[in-house]
Image (cartoon, rainbow, N blue to C red):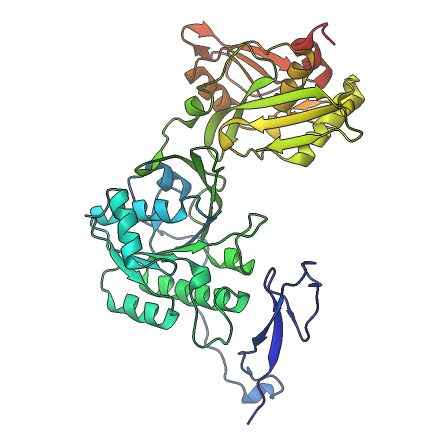
Length: 464
C-alpha cells in the first residue's frame, strides 16, 4: 500500500513546502505553516507521450459576434445593485468579505429576501448559525414572511446534493466559505486546502447550473479575505464591506467585477431594521459640517462612476515629543507623509515639528490621489487657524515638485458640487470642465492653481 504523502501549506498565502518551517518563505508570515495530506493524484508524469489520452479539439471563434449582454436580476436595493454592477448575473460567483459584525449576513439576507419577493428562487445556507438564529434575524428585520429557503450545513457533499435537487434555483448564499468542508480533503475547515477545494466545487456548480452564488469570506487582521489569494481570482466579483463600528455608515465596495465597473460603491446606514440604503451620500457625509472652523476642507471625489463630496478634517498642534505623532483615519498614511514633506520642502511650513491628525468624516476610506489638494488645504488651514471659505470644494493631485496636476472626471465632480450648493472650486489648472456650470442661479467660480505654494497663499494669506 502506498504511503500517504504529507505536505505543509501556508495558511496565509497558500504556498506549499516539503517540511515544516517557522516562517513562510513566500509571504514571510510566522507560524502559518500547517501539515496537510497531499490529495493530488498522478497525471501521467513520467509516461511516454503516446500512452497518454489525447485531448479533444475545442471550437475556436473570433471576437465578432451577436451575443447579447447577460440579463440582470435586480434586488431593488439600488445601492446593492450598483456595487454588483447593475444587478446579479446568472452563473456568476460573488465573494463578499468584511470585518466580523460589519453586516455581511444582514445585507445578504435583505438582498435575497427582496429577490425572493420578486419570484426569484433563492436558498440561504448558513454554516455559522442555526436555522432558528437566521429566523430570529429575519424577524428583527421584518423579513420573516419572505419565501427564502434556509439551510444549516457545513458538509459540501450534502450541500451540493441538496442544491442539485432544487429545480429552478437562481440565487444561493453560502455563509461562510471558511466553515465549509469537503470530506475528500484531510484537513480542518478554514484551511487553505479546504477553502480552495470548496470554492472550486461551488463555483463549478454555479457555472453548470447557471446559478448566481454568494460566498461570504472572513477577513484577516490586515483586512484581506482569509484563505488563499487564488480565491479572489476564481470568482467573478469581489465585494468588500467597509465601515467603522463607531459610525453608522457602511460602504459596499467592488474591487473586482467581470460584469461591471470596479471601485463602485454602495452606501448604507445601520438602523434597527438592518441596513438602509443612502441615496445621496454626499449630503449625508457633509450634512453636519460647520463652515467657520479651520482645518476642514470639502473634497470632491469619485468612487467608481459616482461623484461624492466628503469632509476632510485636519488638526495641527505643537508637539512636546521628540517624535511628533501622526494619526490618520480613512486615508493612506504614506500619502500624508508625502504631502507633509512637499509642504515643508517647497513651502517651508515646518510641519515636521507638529503633531498631525487627519480624519475622513463619516468613516469613508479614500484612495484616489485627487484628495491631495484637499488634505494639503486642511493642513494649511489648521496651521494658520484660518477657515477655508464656505461653499468651496477642492480636488487635485500634488507631485513631489509641488506641482498641482489635473485629475479625471472633473465635470462630474463639479456637477455634484453644484447640486449641493457649492459655488467655488479650488482645482488644478488646465482641467477640462464646463465654464457654464451654475448653482442656485449663481455662476460657479473656478480658482485654478498650478503650484502648491499658491494654495498656501490662498488659504493662509499672510498668517504664515
